[in-house]
Every structure is written in C-alpha cells, then in structure tokens.
View 1: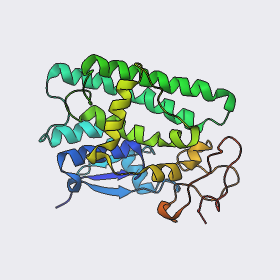
View 2: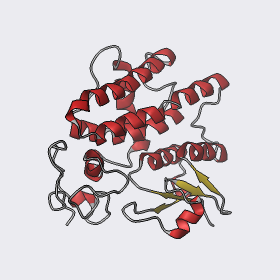
View 3: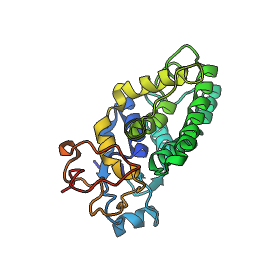
Length: 264
C-alpha cells in the first residue's frame, strides 16, 4: 500500500522534528522518506511538486497532494493520526503551546546567524541575540511549569519543534564555545533543553554528525553552497560523515580545505 512521502534532508532540523513526532506516535514506518541531495540543483520533478520552491521538507499524500512547511506538516500528522495525542488537547494549553512555538523562528534565526558570522567584532552581539531568545523561553517555562521538565507534563509538540533546533546548535558549542550561563534567567530552560536532547524519540542525529556536516555554515556558506577555495560541500553523502575527522574550530581565521575535512 502506498504511503505518504516526505522529501527531506536527513540532517535538517525541520525534517527531524517530523521524525520525532512520528517516533512519539509509533508511526515511523507509516511514512516513506525520500532523501534530497542539497549539494545539487533540485530535480525538475521535485520543483514541479513544490511549485518552484526549494525549501524542504515537503510531504506528498497518497493521492498526490502536497504540503509544505514543517509546522504545517506536523499539524497534519497530528490530526491525521490523533492517537496517541502529542499536541495538547485542552484549549488553553493548546493556545499556550502554539504561542510558545511562535518563538521557534526567531530562535532558529538567532542560532544560524551566530554560527555563520565570521566577524569577531560581532560575536558578542550575535551571542546576546541568542541568549535573549533563551531568556524568553525560560520565562515561558517558569510561568507554565516552573518545577517540571517540559512545557507541561510530558514531551509534547513544542518539544518536537525546538529539540531539533537545539541539537543543531551543537555547532555553536563546538565552533563558538557557546553555553548557557548559570542563574535564574537560564536555569529552567537549561533543564528543559537537556531533557529534550536526551529524549529517546529525538536520537536521529549525533553531535559529531552535526558538527561535521554543518562546517560550511560555520564559515558562512549555507544550504549546500561552496565556501571559497573548496570544491566539495560538507553536506555531501560520500565520503560518509562517520569516516571524516572532526573539523578545525578556527572558523574566524581560515576555511579548511576539502582534504582537512575528509571530503576527498
């Protein structure tokens, strides 16, 4: 029997959040995943499905209908496969959950802007922008569940949305030496972050995988673009990331060669 298909990039946070939701529902095999190589131009057949846009993931239903944007796809899966519920069912809690999720765009942007920055004079500015987002999340968590782990009583839809981004921000730990400060402005969100990262349903990627594949972001080249002086993207499938060395951390001083990154 034909299944829905998700066209995706395996290390993309917007794809992983969908995988996390499916794991929570015990439905990982209910959807087929079709991997797209972002180091190459999109195929014409895929652009026809997406109506010319290149952002992934996109979902194709069994009857050929297309859905785009990960948050839309999450809601579709949650409503199509309602048992077990991951999103909140109480109207007030659902509203709070949705409000909390509205912060994922600015949060993700702050992290990606920080890792792609190569101007040392702007490092502290980028760090403060990300810390401001963490403080906002800390405040929300303190308001709704100050003594617990999650936004409410369990790992839910908000956690699906944010966990994959927080995993990508391992590149900030590695390339920027980033960590959350200690203190009341961050302690609650730090506890939440650590619980999210350790959750069994969210283990699709590893620290080393993120650091190796996202090296090009750390030197200012995103979405499969080639950094200056390089002929291969850090996002290539071959050589496999497991056989590559850990990249150099000195992102502000130079761009590592293909050979240094184990790409040739």
